[in-house]
Image (cartoon, rainbow, N blue to C red; front, side, top):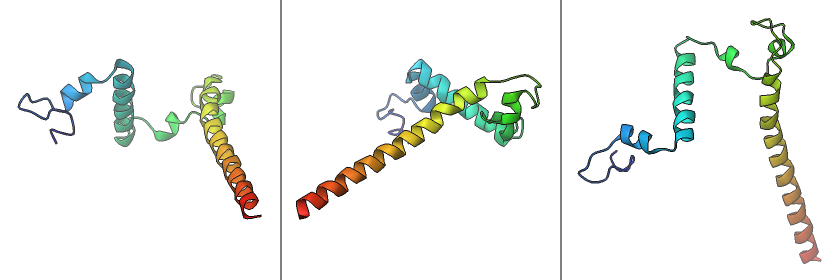
Length: 105
């Protein structure tokens, strides 16, 4: 396990030293992900409250009773990433098919 965290030699190290060696943004992202996941699994926070695209909350009819337009704004890039990736793969496969058919003729 020492080699996993880069401790390798007799100097020690371990998970704490590895975590501190991460860049600040990565450390914040990883730490907050672990904390929020743990809180949701222990039922301190409901998973449904963590959803970014609940239309009740976006329109102001949800739990807070306020308009929360940021929820839909933050969920849009995720949709576009999957859509663009699927389109690129489709076009790539079409090009491969056309090239294959041209070579066979």
